[in-house]
Length: 547
Ligand SMILES: Cc1cc2nc3c(=O)[nH]c(=O)nc-3n(C[C@H](O)[C@H](O)[C@H](O)COP(=O)(O)OP(=O)(O)OC[C@H]3O[C@@H](n4cnc5c(N)ncnc54)[C@H](O)[C@@H]3O)c2cc1C
Image 1 (cartoon, rainbow, N blue to C red):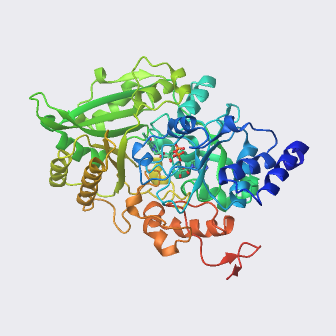
Image 2 (tube, protein in one colour; image 1 turned 30 degrees about the vertical axis):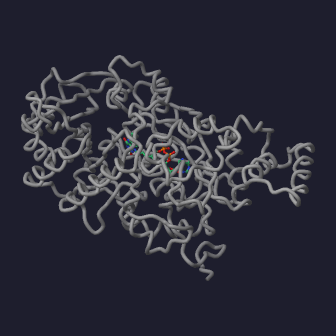
Image 3 (cartoon, protein in one colour; image 1 turned 30 degrees about the horizontal axis):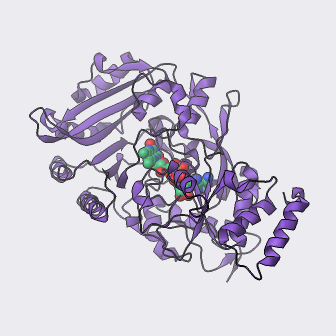
């Protein structure tokens, strides 16, 4: 890269830095100059670099562009000193080398959906300034139907991926999330579950290759990075091992016609008994069927606030067979032909994401979220044992105390139970009935309001502790939750980080730490919940230890 650097750039760099004896340059200036030195091309500052001082309006609009959780844009959160929007892959290499050279933290954002916003702001305080590397412009997708695969750059949303696959074939799909604006870059680093998980597993279970930039600035594919690192990046959490440039996805077969339905039940129409039954059947039912339960509060017909449980499903087949499956395994829901809608797989993506039924698939190319940018706090749990009816009744009581709470119960079983816990770092497999997501959104930015809602969700989580998994109380790393603990500096101990590491990764935590030590021994890639390094290094053979 540096070989193509022009004499002019070199000259201006020398002039600038020889002058630095007299004048001190900001870290932003130094980073820009360094990128210019390392880059293959000349990059006008205004097109790819944004700082709060030089171009505040553009800085805010770029920072906020994909930031979904407004809570993470408020003080005491720290914003980046500079945002660098990479345009070509070698920009990413240059960013790593320059951040290293300047000893400044580098954060990476693909889709910006991190629940704690740590891809674009920091909870570590002023003492850890950082630069944000944004992938918004690295979003190319190349689908190869013959090879059953697609190479996707990290900045693409999953909606774009789904669209590009369906553009080439109506009988291919990819098993990833339900919200179409998720960035494929961060999404797969934590697992990536969606409505085809019971049939095909997670997005991360269906990755066959990847290209990453490591802590030395090298680009590595699967063959070059080796199987340990390839294992770690598929579920070991974002921002610990390197920067994903692109994933190679394995496509899966989907029928040309699938069926969807949504059946709501309130407390007044038997929600408690039905959810009790669902816990006994949804993880055992036909693998082609995924029925999640979206739980909210609504006004009942009498105008009283009540709980609504909406049974929302994707069936990889037609209505006739779906009705047979339901009548056999879950007749209590009372599903009728009228509730069922047949459509193509890509239309089902739009349906499940919650877009209006007349939304054209092309809309997915806009990468827009249906979920509005709001303030929110979320948590997750895994159930291995059903919550008894008495527990559900107590749960409703607490649920109704909050303004606009949301719970989503996602069924496991099927393929999820057949893949071993150590196949990739995502460990929540055999025996899981469902994962529960708790979320509370609000719209005012003041601390008092935030405290009120955060206190509610913490209490609710405490109540659910009686029923959730134990030792560890498991959590989904893609539903990042800093309440579980966080690194206060770049040197957390194995034990300190294991507090949340074991919840996210169970026994895979130990192997993840070993991989981390081997591939990033100086802990260049670190953040509030990155994996720690051990107080010794591995020798060149990757096995012997150097203290
Ligand atoms: C509305 C909403 C709906 C969701 N629905 C689902 C769902 O259906 N299924 C599911 O599994 N999850 C879901 N999630 C969670 C989602 O998978 C995670 O938040 C995921 O990390 C988002 O990836 P991103 O690229 O959009 O986020 P980002 O905020 O960009 O990144 C998330 C993390 O990954 C790191 N990262 C980002 N890009 C890279 C990269 N190129 N290389 C290395 N590290 C990187 C970041 O530093 C950060 O730590 C949902 C989240 C939201 C907000």
